[in-house]
View 1 (cartoon, rainbow, N blue to C red):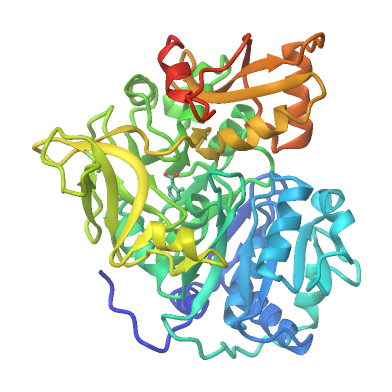
View 2: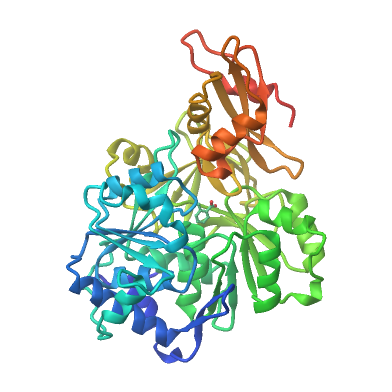
Length: 511
Ligand code: 3SK
């Protein structure tokens, strides 16, 4: 674990580590080709921090970032932290209803939003209680992020935060569909960079990194911002959706040495008829997280590109990966071993620690565990139990210390690496006039990757096709949540008290 002084500002540290590299490129926009040097980054981040102060934003107040992965993202995030203002990084794939909840829950006083995302927020501006100002990214109007940066003094004057001060929030998906504001401290970013970024990936100054996971995800934030900045490497940012063509173009054009993906994407990349040859890429190491990597995908990728995929698992609560395969020790089909600096245990239903081969819940003890869920005492107590954080994931460990994923302890699904609550999808299906009841489970597709499947009971005399119901969900929720298959059934299996027995649906659904 890293010793961090009591007086500590995370953004100041990340910028100070690169004081000798002001001419070096820190970030590149993969679409426009524009770049930001470490010198530009430091200057603009301090300008942004000073402009925030001049506008009256005081330390410890929250602001929301709902921005695409452009060069302005790191400036806004670091600038807020320098000013002691707490950025709440929001998942840009969500809906107006989700953002309304997050703005109210966090009491964000400002919103920094990319121009293409503005329509999703339009109805909230002026209606969310504490939201004072909206600044547009990717624009140079008077109320833009660019104008704010230009207005600020570049004098470095970080707020005197402590290592234990709240630094930023991320929203973690809740099993009821209500996101939980996960509060991280100033000390957490650098802990993840040292323990996983340096300790497992061996990231170094001459690396060029590219993450398909966006900066608003804990996975993407470490991949593209903390880890490269901690050693002075260069990160390529892709503002667009990471479809296979865009990912391959970026790998070809910028020749990253580290690529961070998720299993669904690796499967899509391998299936792409136009994929480049091994000699055209310059990959040194690849990572996967979000959901368990099927062994076959790992093997095929290594065969195709001569580069291992280090499968691991992290969480929004722990900020990054705490269990991972390591270079030259990869065992596909497992999630690897504990990341040094994190202690893991597997706990059975009886509360006792499991031995080798016994299945139980994975719990983590490490220096990057979130302080709490904002405004949610019950869920905080249920997840953060003293030194130990409950993952909600079931695991077994073998005699060599390799862990194998065994499913979730609750009904949550991971789709393309992102949590989906079956209850939220069911509730959405039931808002359709023809639907009486619905139950959603996870079903593995041909690549062994889990996608939502819905069982639907229609109201008597009503009709609706699977396509209509799928579109209904896509229009109401973040599109990745829609059920890929819908089976119409006369009734759902239930307990005597009327609870849906999803386990029976799972058991009767062939893999
Ligand atoms: O989903 C994961 O495995 C993950 C990895 C790193 C950081 C955050 C998360 C949720």
